[in-house]
Length: 247
Image 1 (cartoon, rainbow, N blue to C red):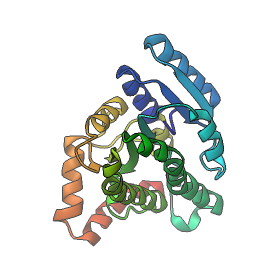
Image 2: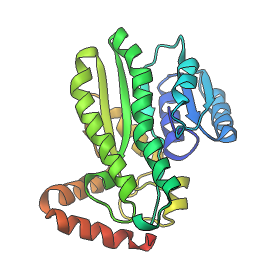
Image 3: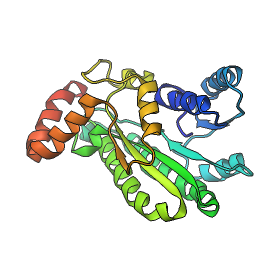
Image 4: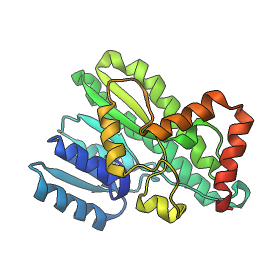
């Protein structure tokens, strides 16, 4: 579980623990990981390993491989993300590079490190977190949205490639959720927001049903409207009006 310290990542951890799965929790913030681990082990009969890693560091895979050595991995969830908010021309090089490292390079390296052992056993599953913002250009979070489109297309391709190895993959195209990270970045509620635990539950329940999942009825309606019913430029303009407060 990458990006497990709070919000949706913590919700995924709880959902998996409720299903009786032991966990390897990966994130940068040691204190939050320790608190989540204590909560899970006290409430459920599972084991939890905490791995403090910066997924923006391209060398993280060695530490990750050591952390899971000897384990039969059942599900890999890559939830970590970095969101540079605001005009593209005003973003720093550091912000852009961190978004690419965490949102694009991170899942690639994690899957290359973890999926082969699943393939050798002939079973496993992967959840990659995409976003409704990755279904079309999204002004004012353009880099984040592009990275989420990358994860969606990666999941769809690997879903076909890896199913013959017994590995299922789903990309969750989530809408806004009232997580601590979301509120730090955007600071307001929007229609159709799901609770993180509901989004996590629906995503895990959706494994085996195809490579793309949009949790929430209103979110699915939005995806159809933006992706099929509106002209592309109209969809982008509408999204731009809703995100202009980020400028």
